Image: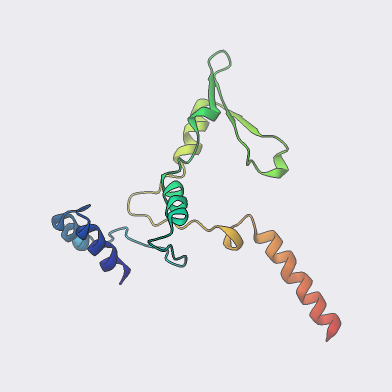
Length: 142
């Protein structure tokens, strides 16, 4: 089991105590889950660096956020807003901003799975369009 391997490594590296491991094993839902489809070799410095940068990435950037006291609004500038919006910023009132950034914090004990790439919601329309095109080709060929 991956859990045993990870806890073993953390114990060997003295990054976690045996008592904490025992406590986590006693929890009904430890919250432990690992996505291990992508292998990063121990001797792959670029892979380890990319993983560390991903793990430590903040959900939003304080540098891109500005509070305008005169209008009591929060302005957030970004590069990757949805193309349909046609802009690279968002303006909200402070309470709406807090609601948006805290909506990503899962409830206690909740599991959260985020899909990227072909599995993400963003790619779903393109994937469906590709499937429809393949079906059309099969029906024409058939």
